[in-house]
Amino acid sequence: MRGFIAFSKKEITENIRNYRLLIMLAIFLIFGLMSPLLAKFTPQLMEALMPNLAEAFENPTALDSWTQFYKNVSSLGLSLTIILFSSCLSGEYAKGTLTIMLTKGLSRPAVVLSKFSAAAVILTVSYWLAFGVTYGYTAYLWPGASLPHVFLAAFALWTAGLLYLSILMLGCVLFRQAFTSILFLLVVTVIMGLVEQIEQTAGYSPVILVSKNIDLLSGTVTASYFTIPFIVSIFTSAALLIMSIVVFNKKQL
Amino acid sequence: MKAIVAERLTKIYSGEKKALDNASFELSQGEVFGFLGPNGAGKTTAVKLLNGMISPSEGSCHVFGIDPSSSPEKVHAISGVVTEHAQMYGNLTGQENLVFYGTLFGIPKEESLKRALALLERLDLTVAKDKKLTTYSTGMRQRLSLARAMIHTPKILFLDEPTSGLDPESAQSVNNMIKELASDKGTTVFLCTHQLRYAQEVCSSYGLIDDGTLLAVGSLDALRCRIFSGLKVHIKSNRFPEGISFRKTEGQWAEINVQTEDEIPPIVKRIVDAGGNVYEVMANRLSLEEIYFSLIEKRKEQKEVR
Ligand SMILES: Nc1ncnc2c1ncn2[C@@H]1O[C@H](COP(=O)(O)OP(=O)(O)OP(=O)(O)O)[C@@H](O)[C@H]1O
Ligand SMILES: [Mg+2]
Image 1 (tube, each protein chain N blue to C red):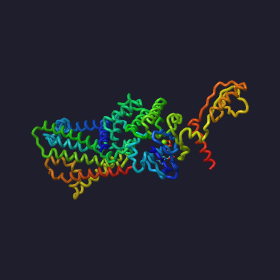
Image 2: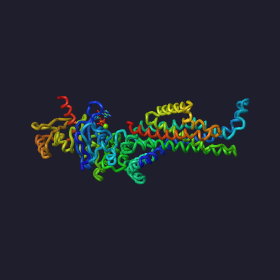
Image 3: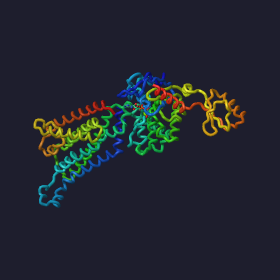
Image 4: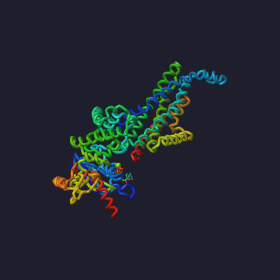
């Protein structure tokens, strides 16, 4: 526990110094601001650029604002997070900084959990910042608009974000190179995508948590549709973290 | 209790070559032990064994009665290590690095900070304490890793070439610190080095190792006894009488071996009586360097015979 706390503090300080925290906050803040703005001004933009198509974009609603949000965050936002944190262990491997601490009694699970926690905290803060900004801005631009399950939809994407981080964690523990960890994550993502494609298993895939958020807001799917993917996601994350710890315990440094 | 006891300690890395072969030695508490030997002799291997970073192939070792291979964490609680490639975090400042390691070892934050500042002061790093490690020079890093090794005031320090990247001034101050630690706090120091002159200034006993084999262990006097315990006298004169076995060296210099100091005045008298002028006389015992080379030389000869 003592090792975990000391190591986590060091992680946060390092993430501030190497600008990871700043980049994450800045990018997510931009997403938060841009999404409602883009939705609001798309009609004007369209009219200026392609007048003949403009009709289709008339009268944007709060739903368009959230559509932009989920599009940006689930693709660009999560990719950026993954790229930033893919090097969280490779740097330590390359510099050999862990060896001395591990021989000095720092427990290996503490290293894995600290790395994950630091990434998770930074993602959480940045993500909910973006959400808060979009939420406030949307309410301001479309006063009185009310959508169902705004928080639930956001919660779903956040859970998925943590799942991706735990997949990345296992990748980082398995492979020495940051690039290989990203590749590992891509492979797992493709598998989860396939699970969603197959009719019998479609309802179980955590991919639902990142792809169906808008359908929840528009009422196309019900909240209960998210229950199973949500549970699957939580358990998978936990299992992945345990696997990371087990693998890291056996790893030669 | 003995600080270190090694019994027939042997390490064979995957392969057949013995990196350490049947090494037995003991260290008392408060001793500064110089572990000397050429590249690839097995010094780092010994440090790793004593720290439990690797396990012995045969034999055993104990540090303050603890077996490092079965309970490394207990050894680490009382020991500090500086290895050749010890790395710290480039993004953190010198002070932050030290405080981090301190808290990792269970020292409360304020106490860690206090100790860190004292160590930084002592190792001449106070001006750089708030600079990121990436801006440190090799020597500064070396000194910082020394500070890290001492943050939890260990009973025993393992230093693997702690002065290799240091300028003479820093090396001197590190050596003084090692001496102080041993004399004031009773810290035992296991020091691996190539720098024999520094070793002779700092160490109270020595182990000479070559090719995994421990050639000799003991104090400087004990080692001298194995080669030549007397004095080597250098004399500068314009004339050396016959009948005394002088070895001519350079210019007007010649040297001669004697067993005790008392033999020197008669020799000088004989030169003067023979009409020579004596300009300088120097008498030295064998230096560590000379002992080292003659032991290594002897071993080479033994190998050739075999
Ligand atoms: N991990 C390893 N695997 C295989 N052989 C090794 C390993 N580490 C060291 N050796 C071998 O063991 C022998 C002793 O190495 P060691 O590092 O102990 O030498 P050293 O005395 O510290 O040398 P130096 O003065 O160069 O630091 C060498 O022949 C080296 O090649
Ligand atoms: Mg070495």
